[in-house]
Length: 246
Length: 216
Image (cartoon, rainbow over all chains, first blue to last red):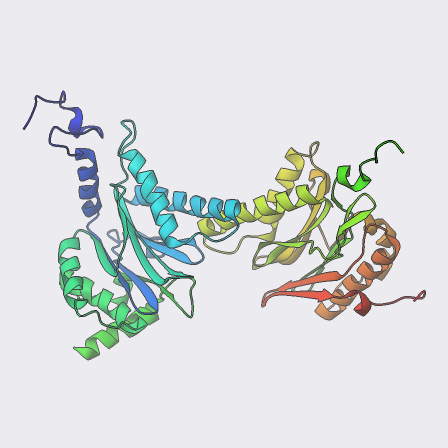
């Protein structure tokens, strides 16, 4: 039911198309896949894990300066997928929002509230003609003081939700089906199993045998609730455990 | 008597007429403060902890107007929270002191608070900074508040370079006890915070456990 064109701008700025679509928002999702990377998050019984590929395309790059994992507060971490510059902008905004919350209300912000706040900000970009949505997706992890381990995701459309496991990026459809299958029986996932499930998901879906230098793993656990990234040696230990199980 | 006058303490500004001190030792710092908050002649809080955290290993000691000092400490705490996330490591003590100084200088006409900033960082170890009236200077030790005038002689005579952690803690406690004895606006208990590379330790020394001098 096309009722004449919207002067053809519905693809250029965030206004509705005659079919009720926001093309700019849809293009933002395509931008996330542009980076070619995929990230996976898995929630276990007493920990949450996020894993992403570490691709260093240029031999001249210093790989220690390349990362997609960020601390937002000492206890909330995130992995960013998509456009690098947009990712850093969203991370910076998240840090400031978390800091302001602590200053204004006197206690640490929780992951779900921070995720909602960022999603609300992303929604504004889908309503403003002069600003484009950000081409990146954030998966947040934390140990919530009341709810325990939590995994949240917010996307350029301004949608956010809590997950048991989720994937974002170039191969997200395949990765999400893999995770659905593995979590169908609602298994109890220990910390190690959660890490290994996330890594296996990536290697299966990308058909790659990872080396420890090609992965970034971020974790929060109930005994160590501060977000931290695993060292190469720790990742290697998990890769060995996965290989031994097969 | 035609109508009772309003009690004076209702209209007096709440000040932390205070004694505060911070000293650097090899490997860290010790901060100390008394606990009296006065509004004119009335003590409105006899157990206030004037050593406020700015970050895990950086504390500041508050003196002057209670509201002004607390507000500066809270704002700088917020700024350091975001800053430490952005740089990915613990902030430098000098950064914290600079943030405090920038606020003190910008609002030097409107506010009256003096914060002594002290802490430990990986680059320069233990450091003490004074930020009185908007200056920034690093010192081996610093005293502040109304009670400090009574103990300048004591600290100048008794301070030695290269004291150990325990000697520094004793020095701080002695200074606080002497000042609290003589200054009407200082009193209560003594709060001590010791910061070194292993961590931060907070301690309270109750009134009757404070060191006594010739007149007691």
